[in-house]
Structures are given as structure tokens and as C-alpha cells.
Length: 274
View 1 (cartoon, rainbow, N blue to C red):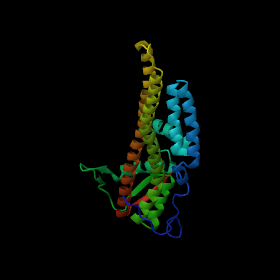
View 2 (cartoon, rainbow, N blue to C red; view 1 turned 90 degrees about the vertical axis):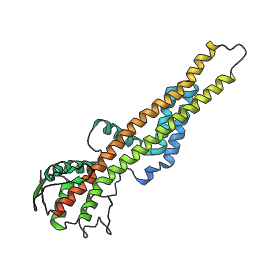
View 3 (cartoon, rainbow, N blue to C red; view 1 turned 180 degrees about the horizontal axis):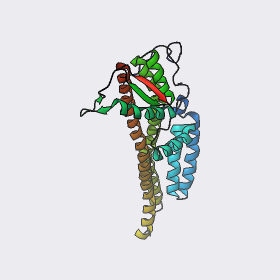
View 4 (cartoon, rainbow, N blue to C red; view 1 turned 60 degrees about the vertical axis):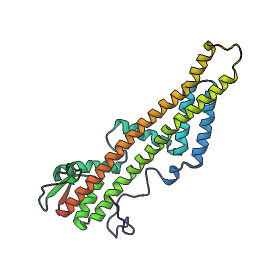
């Protein structure tokens, strides 16, 4: 659903203050990771090489995966870990503004009888003109209440809802992209490590080499590919949780905007209850 902006939308003289965009979940400087990402990647890459030389292949591949995460996230690595942990063990959105949208949508859907038809279109009603809708006390509900009282315009309503939605959307999108990058790269690094191990093994071959001598070294080299695939699968699973939560957030936003349209069309009255 398209977002509409009209001039300086945060100016209270135009309408009312909404969520500030000054504190994005992941800022522009962090998105590219910058010098910190490169330095961190180089340092961890050297550590991984040390463990590879000492034949601690799993530790080497694990550190390599962290190095790739540092490369794409920079100083945001701790935030990514915390967000991933929260996503796995909580059903709420990690950004409070998006949690307000989720919390407000529940009573709205129940009161307005929001549902989807067989074609996936959002439907509401039947409704009574001028009906009263009770919402939980949170910043979003108060913003909607003020909007319906002062300026019941859908463009403003959609903009307010988008401000409560966009930060969490950016966080999920960035996190999913970072994890997908590591999941894509790890099998290749595993294959590279395996080839390096095989080259070293073949260079040490001599006339007296037996199958009993080669088999353990070959198995040890192939472990790098196995560990790379396993780590890739792990990162892929974590990324899929962000994708699922992103779809749920998009669904909530679309449904919420439809509910706002219904409120405005029916000149509903919003009551915020503690």
C-alpha cells in the first residue's frame, strides 16, 4: 500500500507529531558496515585460518561464519543476535512501535469483524454508522483517536500507521538479508577449505602411501564442506523466521490500513481505555 507524504509530516502545525524517524532500527552507516566490518572480518578470518591449520575445522568454519556476519553488520552484530533470539522465543515484534500496531489490530479486527474472503480481499462489517470502538491505551491508539476527532483523512491515517510499521520492517528485512548472505557464502568457504586440504594431502603423497593413510586425511578434509553446509542450513533457518515475521507484519499493516479506512468511512468514535 503506497505511503503518501505531504511536506514536513512531522510538523505539528500540519497535523500532529507521529513516531520520529530519527531512530531507525538499523541506520544507513550500519547497513554498509563500513571500515569496522572490514577490520572485524579480517581479524576473525586470520583467527579462522589458525584453527584451520591446526585442523580444528568446525571451530574454523564457525569463526568464519561470524567473520561474514561482522562484515555485513559491523557494530550491529550484537543487535542481530539479540533480535534473532527474541524472534525465536517470542510472538511479539521486537520494535515497540510495531508491537503497538499488533496490539491495536486485535480489538479492531474483532469489533469491525475484519476478515478475508476467498480471493484474499479484506472485508469488514456489517457496521453501524458512528459506532464506538474501544482500543487499548498506547501511542498508536491515541494517534488514531486524535485523527478521527480532528482530521479524519485516510492519507494521514495511512502515514501514521506506516510510521509504526516501517522501523520493524527495516529491521526484519536487514536481518534476513544478512543471514541469507552468510547462508549463501558458507558452503563456498567450506568447499574452498576442502580443496586446500586436498591439495596439501596430494602434495604429501609418495610411493609408499596406502589407502589406510589416505582415508583419514580425505575424511578430515571433507568435513569442511559438511560443516559449511550445516552452518548454512542453520543461518537459513534463522533467516526464515525473519521472513515469516516480515510477512506477518505486512499482513498486519495491510489489515490495519483497511480497518482505518472503515473507521473513517463509518465516522466511528475511538475510545482509548487503560
